[in-house]
Length: 391
Image (cartoon, rainbow, N blue to C red; front, side, top):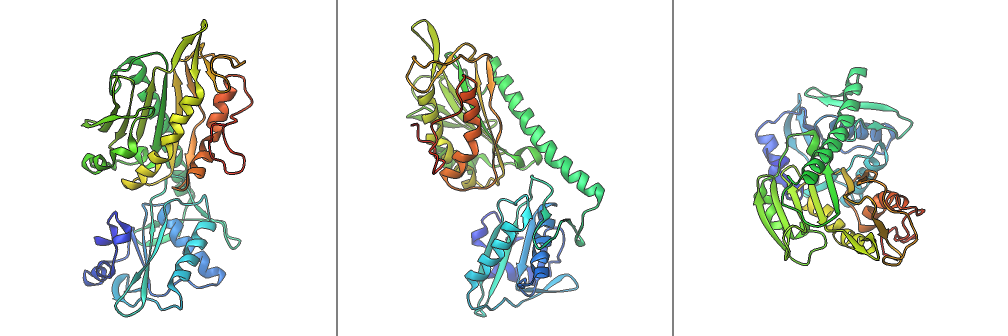
C-alpha cells in the first residue's frame, strides 16, 4: 500500500485515491475521517484517543478528508480551511501536548488535492515507550487499537504494554553486555590495540523490540555520518552485521559499526597512557572526539529511517587505576578510576532535534563520569545553551 511507504513526504493524492479505488478498509493501521477534528474539548480528546491507540498498538495512519462507507474508503473529499498550515499546526500541537509520555516521531502533513482542497495525513509510529495515555482536557485514559478500531485498554492489555516497554529496555541492556563481552574478549568486529577503550552504543528501542532490519545497501551511501570517533580518515566496508567503518592509518585503533537493526557501536582504543609514573586519559580530547560526531550519528539514524526513542550508553573499559585529566593534562588533583569497566548511566533521546537537545540529554552521563574521579560534575557544558563546549 503506497501510504505506508517510508518516505512520508512523498505521499500524494494518487496514494490516497488508491485507497478508494482499492476499497481499502479501515483496520489495525488505517483510520478515515471525512472532517477534521474540531476545536471543542471532546474533539481534541477524540484526536488524542485515535493517535494514542495507534501508538499503543502497531502504529498507523489517520487520513482526514477521506470518507468511508461501513469502514471502507469511499470518497476523497478533502477539507477546506482558510489556512491549511494553521490547521496542521493546530493538530500537531494538540498531539504533542496532550499525551503522556509524548510520542516521538509523529508526522502531520497536508496533501493538496485537485479539487483545491487538502487532505491531512497523520502518521503515528509504533511506540516503545508504552503505554501512552490521554492527559489533556481532564482525561486520564489509555486506548489501544485492533482491527475493529480503538477501544479503552483492559487491565490485561495495560499489563502487556508495560511489560513490552520494560522488556525492550532490558534487551537493550543485555545487548550492551553481550557486545562488551565480545570486545573485552577480543572477539569484536576488529582486533583492537592499546590500553583502555571508550565504547558508545546508540540503541533504538525498535531495534530490540522488533525484527525490523535495514538493508546494508541503504546504509552504505550514508557512511560519512558514521565515521569512527577520533579518526581523520576511515575505511568503510560491508560485513555480516551491516556496515563497519575502521579508523584510517594504524589498524585496530577503533571503528564504528552500524548494525542492520539500526544500532551504532563506536569504539576508541588506546586511551590510557603512562606519564610521570602514573596512567592517565586525556579527558578533554576524548570528549571533543565524542561530541564532534555524536549529533551526526543521531541525525544519521534519522536519515536511514530509524525511529526514536534512542538509548545512549557510554562505557569505558580497561581504565582501572587511570586518572581522567580534564583540567590540566596529567596534573589534575583527583582520584583514579576504581574499576576496570565504568558503565555510565543510560541516557534517552525521545525525538530527533538540535545539538543542544542531544547534549542536554547526555549531560547526566558525563556528570557521572566526572563524579567517578572525585569531581562534582562536568564543567564542559554551557549553562545557558546546554551545549558541550569544553571550557
